[in-house]
Amino acid sequence: MSFQEPRLVFDKYSLGVGDRFAHQGRAQLQACIQAAELGVAVVPVWNKSNREHNIVGSEPASVRAEADQAVSALGWKAGYHVDADHINLKTVDRFVASSDFFTLDVADAIGRPAEPSAIGTFLAAHPELTGTIEIEGIAEPFQTSRAEAAAIAAKYLFAVRQAGDIYRKLAAVKGEAGFITEVSMDETDSPQTPSELLLILAAIADEGIPAQTIAPKFTGRFNKGVDYKGDVEQFEREFEADLAVIAHARQRYGLPRSLKLSVHSGSDKFSIYGPMRRALVKFEAGVHLKTAGTTWLEELIGLAEAGGEGLLLAREVYASAYAHSEELCKPYAAVIEIDPARLPLPAQVDGWSADQFTGALRHDQSNPLYNADLRQLLHVGYKVAAALGERYTKLLDSCEATISRNVTGNLFDRHIRPLFLG
Ligand SMILES: [Zn+2]
Image (cartoon, rainbow, N blue to C red; front, top):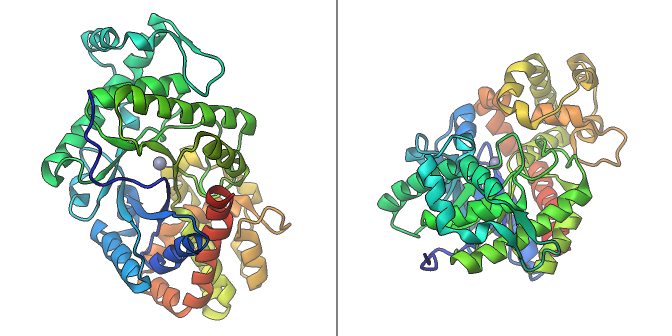
């Protein structure tokens, strides 16, 4: 089948900015303005998942309001979007009115068996997915036996059909192609290989989903808020192969021209930004880099840097996160790795200066004070700040100068510059 090109076309480079407390919209947008001033268009996408809304106690409309306000306050004329991140059939409803970007999360459905007849029908319709598959840009052709293709179809067909159900539900209320569709499969146990990605994209096309981004799970560990952990060379090979597969699938299956990869938990994966950048240039490809908690950590850094009450509150947040670490880590168990022995005791942190606190938390691996365990704990610790309510948000306002400088600088210098400017 072939698609009408979507009315709402996603740009080549885009940055997902999560903002847990909806206070940093302008500071985040400022990072995209800095890129624009250097001649590179990076479209901001404010994303917040149902899980984050539930933990913070916020509603999707607040994300739309924040994005609109930031855009009008700073006179941003280029595009921007509001992403209902990781939604499914059960959780999509509350996002319909305020989002124009939907991340259909079907990771839980991976491995749920499709009907055997559906697998047979799919493979019969796609003889090109078995045998020797040559893809431009990949030196070694894929060799996929019929049994392997059937196994891949058995693993993913049900999940893709479910994405189709969510897409059609949205299209019925929002109008077809009036929104950007992402299909995400990243929150699962095992990474998808490039040949799996190819079959998934063929199935997405069959379902009539005009996907503009696809978020596979990549090889290696994408722990929250800290650097990539894994074989960087293997990552680079697979990332390149994924880009080649996407270009191939766009042509072969008539998927939208704007289809690109979306990298989740992409914040702070510094050691793979260089390889990603090289691959994007080589394939003339775009990418969506989704960040979330990196901004909240800059809020804490900005609070601590302000000293006084800001520093006191930053220490208090740490003490409470430390006391509740088990509960806070639980929903994120698959995407954090914290060694409790490396966490400083709250009594120690109470004696820390602003420099000691920001040195431990700021993601500067060359600083001997940097502590990746503390950083991950605070990354998942935003529930503590949410519980502080107005006490927290009022201090965000009074410490705005130091916070916004850190939020903008982090997104621009550590993310946009290495990945989009090179
Ligand atoms: Zn994700």
